[in-house]
Length: 352
Ligand SMILES: [Zn+2]
Ligand SMILES: [Zn+2]
Image 1 (tube, protein in one colour):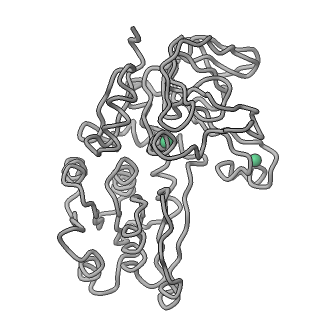
Image 2 (cartoon, protein in one colour):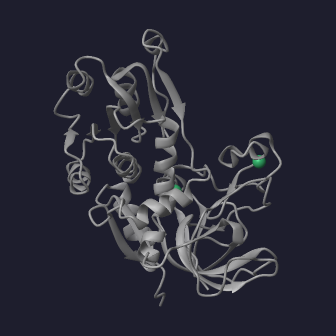
């Protein structure tokens, strides 16, 4: 079968490899669509952060590995001891793999597993950039009738966004700022809207990204290159600052602006990988007793995302585009890095 395998920095190869074998408790999926993630860009352009260069402690996998963790497809084979899934079912895959025995796993917070692995980085059964992938059946979520597999491939990044909103403990009457309108920022915005939050300000320097989030309903948008973000957010809240801030941008300015414009006893949610350290004096959170929390991946969030998606909460025409498999690196990775695209799905349905 065809697959895009990660060998190292600037080394993703489109290769012909053997199909993964379906084991007990597993299903084989014919992949339909796979989204390229910011973390894939990091692996390709910067350094392996998720891809194991030595055997992964949980799965034993070492690069090269089939990339792709944001995917959907159709079940084509059902292994022994699988209940509730049949050939022909359309599914979205929750790619994180956990040990089920560390303290975090036992407490139910499987996204915080000490030995976490992921389909698409450290999993032996292939990933979303392969024609077929084998995954544990309990990582598959059936798409409801009428939901396309194109939408199905967006469930993973939207689950990252929804988890961040849950970590924010946002209430409908909160003033909220979303720093960054990439895929996660857009997902956070749409989830907040679905939760009934009206007072949302989005901060985004790219004109294309501002237009994309405006197209899905954002009305209060600040260009940080043209105005003082902290002053503007304070002015919009009678000096108090916003109750909740989301750093989805992962730049020093997005983090610092978020901290400095958050109200007393407010909360900042960091849901972005920062490439470099931020110079920050913790005294800044002392006087307002502000909280800063992290949010990683998702934990029991897929069903709610699927439910909201089925109700039309996640329009995606303005921010998602599709490329053929052959163009995954040359067009896909490059366009995301140059910010000429916001979210790219790789169409795996007609591999030549
Ligand atoms: Zn991702
Ligand atoms: Zn664990």
